[in-house]
Image 1 (cartoon, one colour):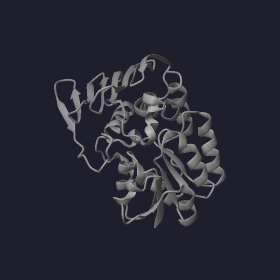
Image 2 (cartoon, one colour):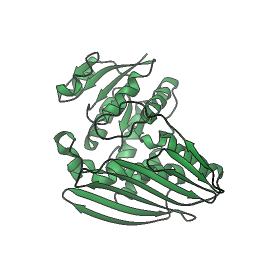
Image 3 (cartoon, rainbow, N blue to C red):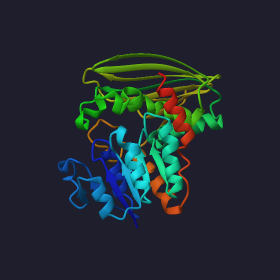
Image 4 (tube, helix red, strand yellow):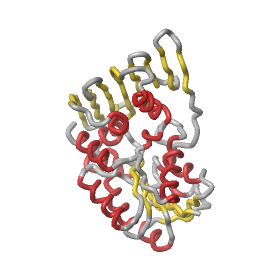
Length: 314
């Protein structure tokens, strides 16, 4: 039975904790947060308000890091130097140098490390990747992706509103769609971007040119109560694959419409995340890598570096 601890019981932990609790070969034994009230709804799990105390008192196989971005590297290294495998929420850092640093520590201490880029485990996005690779609907011609929300008001210590800690929209929202592109299609050949940033909103619109096709991606925090929206539409020669609020639909040449339904499952917290089994799939994948002593190759360090390089130049 693998023993798991989780640090940072904020918004995204509401998507991670159910994933751990659903596994029958894992025990979530400890939670850590500086706010004791955040852990009260988990009375059967041991609570800590000091990370060092949790590391000293618990024998952990895995640490799940759900902290603010600026703390990811520090806490990952502390855990790995004690021989603990680490799953870390995205992004690992706002600096590409930290990718090499973290993976070197993981290798030195013979532990597994993975950044939780959940879109790589999301069925609708995986379907697009599989169609692109198989050529089932011919060549990809164009894509549109969007990820929009209200300006975040939920973060501890308002860390999301501090660009030096959070990276703003590029690292909160746009990173998901860009990471999927790198994962599915490789690095773009050219990038054209537009951004407008005010004190209470941040908007970017980027066109990525991959040579044979292009993808436009729009991301924003709005200064109003705009609902969280994550959608895409990919135009292939013989079909359009759409995920635009009505589930995944394939509009085939000739008039046929195929639906790929996915039941909404799991509690994903209080930050307007769409319900999906992808978080549980991601967590189970990393658990299996630890259990079977295999590298988590689904998320590669060179791809992480490419994503950070692009985001820092938008």
